[in-house]
Image (cartoon, rainbow, N blue to C red):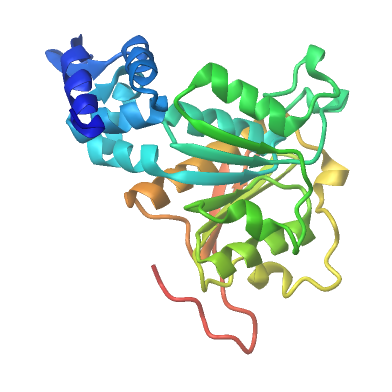
Length: 298
């Protein structure tokens, strides 16, 4: 029997009736059943979960999400690959959310190791993890949360001459950085590779989020081409309290889900500004820099 047919047979045969919170049942595939099928056929757990969804069977771990995004949306997530650049306050929470949501594969890039002052806001940082690499900690966390997510962890600092290598094959890239010049490099690379770029930044109790599609002005509308921009923003003066990265990372993760699944309205050609102190959210229109064509509307 061909592998695909055997996989379908095992997924169907080992799925079970699971109780739905709304009443009734649905056909589900447990984590244990997924592992056993993967081991028996020599496949990755991700491939087993994709086969289940293709046959209308929901991996139990995703059922509560599928109720919102549908089988097709969950299938698109399982097939997708996203790069998270930065694994600190924003990136650590992004990795956690995306793994639980069921993203198919993650590329996590961060050249830093944890220091004691990271503990207040970086969910991957623990007392016994001081000195550990942030990218490696992200990979280890995903393995515990959702081993069916493929992870590439790279302890490197991105530059213009190396970033394309790590982003090729990705469906989108998410900015979890704290350096403005490097953010501009990242957006430039995403545009060059024709993949969406999701920007997020935090400072004090304020944050911002924006989705930049290839051809959009994005960060260029805020900073210009990059010459002379400061390395970092006002966060060096006002700090980064615990709550702000969690809020902004959740919004970035939702933007990733919208881009991958095609649902909802991404924050495109706008900068969503959040003031947690004042409980205020403002959307600012993003215009192309002078002399350039305005970015296309969504």
